Image 1 (cartoon, one colour):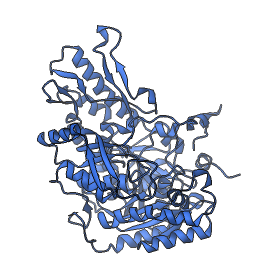
Image 2 (cartoon, rainbow, N blue to C red):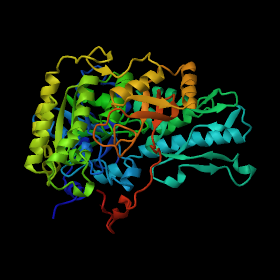
Image 3 (cartoon, rainbow, N blue to C red):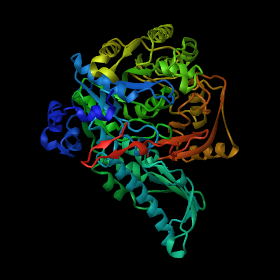
Image 4 (cartoon, rainbow, N blue to C red):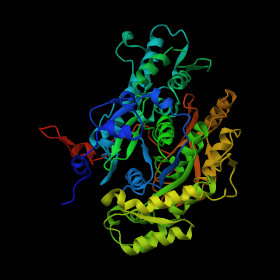
Length: 569
């Protein structure tokens, strides 16, 4: 009987975290161990790395996600291990898993099989407490808003226009929309409110975009939490909340160092929701890793249309980070799913369905190469039920799009199963092709953004939906258009847009598989993230507080009498 991912992880012999740090040249007095196998690396030490040359950044992304899962995190780990196996100095940078998905559908997010980060249970459950600190900072600000109103409301906050929401790191649909302040005058003013999941909070986005403690505090102060009766913004700094919030987050801002089962160093830090935010780990972690290694593998959430687009248009624009190459994770199952096959029938060979699903892969290749100018390779994350004919058809299909597809068996074989992928990535980084034609905004190093900074918010949104999603147009109500105009008048028109939509389709309809064209994207709601420095465009029925499925993964998670965790992925 095959071992589960958690059983594989628990059987591995890990190195003490001090040995992993020493391999990177990080001294003992610059790490704060959390047990034997995980530690935080001090910001003071990371600040000393600024004069070192930067390594190559490899962006891991994927086709449009399917219920079967594509394995981006496992592929990131497998590639990191494989790069070290072929003689390269490599690191991995991933997001921290949110407890909501861990207890909900995914059951874990630290890779899997023989390509996972360890200690897997710790990473998936609480870890070093970063998310709890973000939860506390977010809810502290919420409490200070309601307390300010209760204590006389000196700022004149209109309780109907409080935009700040509380957060919880558990999927709980009952908390999406609530009424607070009931029970009499001593409990404040009754008003409508609600909860988001922690990873959807603006504090999480700020945490991952901040470049220092000072930058973190400055961004926290710029958060717009409410409006007055005459529509003037109220910021966290107006409530004098940002200092305490930064104090709560001080220790969390230091990146977490762990290792793969094969001893590859990894920073696992932050975890913004790729629907409502930019969906990748912290700038501090990735930027530091690039000074410590020659190749850094990082992951963007979901497919190229959500994670990679935001990685480029938000994170790269603000940080100066530039991917040298990208990897698109695809599976035979995903192609058949996008070709119309039901989940229950995916294990059955179906070459016709696979062929019908290939346009989804083609669209993702187009986005990376032709829109962003990033060279890419397709990693076929193999599963045991994949047939040779299906693998060959996927390789041939990718070749028609002008990109190489490489078989990867890291889940079953660890780094050894991804060595071909590693060699292709090294070749792409060493031989970056000339800039493609037709891009909108070239940077000074070949990377292209989807839209220019000086475009209007509407023009930026239209560029994303037409150039990335293949849509015909974007629409919005009169109220939404008025809000966009008001944001531009307030000076926020220079910010990039962050589109919140379903990850399962290029459209806003999760049932529309493949590579749809000609659809229309409607902006349902607009949210200003002034501290994170982007404007969120909410489209479709996307939820910022997910619910649990009919059979949540939490039902399978348990702990034995001797303290061993079981059933986690």
